[in-house]
Length: 127
Image (cartoon, rainbow, N blue to C red; front, side):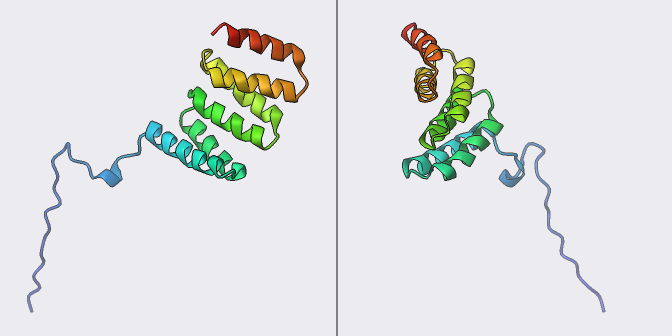
């Protein structure tokens, strides 16, 4: 009894790579995570939004806006120390990030740090 084996040609051109074999673009993935976080934030689901913002930061740690988003989330959860840390990081990455300075100011006020609030107001006014 003879067995016939059918072969399938799986050869690809060297520049052809199936989509599922291409690692996702970190920036695009980070934006997706940020968007998912924003969706939860709009629903006032801050504890659900927070991990998405953290994942975006892990993928793109040089993005001031991701730190700013997470700072806003912490603020809504009344976690002002954590929010201040992220807000400061956002303005360190981008000194012209207005929302970052506003968050620094709000956090400092919430924490009773008038001196730092005054310094941040001065920096914001210089923009």
